[in-house]
Image (cartoon, rainbow, N blue to C red; front, side, top):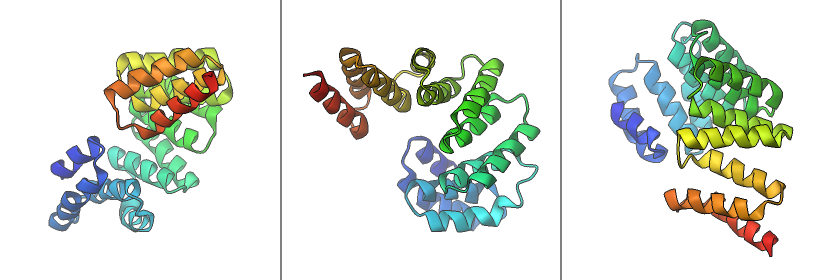
Length: 215
């Protein structure tokens, strides 16, 4: 399980499948193991398999706050918005003072494009932990979608200060600068992020579009 978990944290979800399957085989009653397997299956595109795995443990998760959080993540990735939100709100009941529970609700709501309540949930996380980089990133993304460019820029910049090289924040900040036609700043942000992660193909494509529009 730990082997698979570490691979997941590194973004190597396909490599995590085998050790996580072995963890489930060895301890089928450890509910968090299939939940992590379901996350890896989602990330590798095996959505039907992910749904089958998470359904098997979802109803057993009511008092396990971490398992509830993982169910929220998987059901949101599967597009099952009502169940994702129900699990995220259950996590808040179990961990009302945990900023990660508020952030998870923000993430679930943003995936539904409900950006105003997502921004509220991210703000609640930051009230509990002003240095929570993921909440700053989620707040910035939601504010960007709502058209609050100045506040979005500040939030995304805060996320990058706390976690340099954060891909999602760099991408959203570049998109914001591009929307404002601040092409030089957008290109510089892309360059900075790509120097940390040259394999970020989506951001490289944004940089090429910025360069074309800047001419």
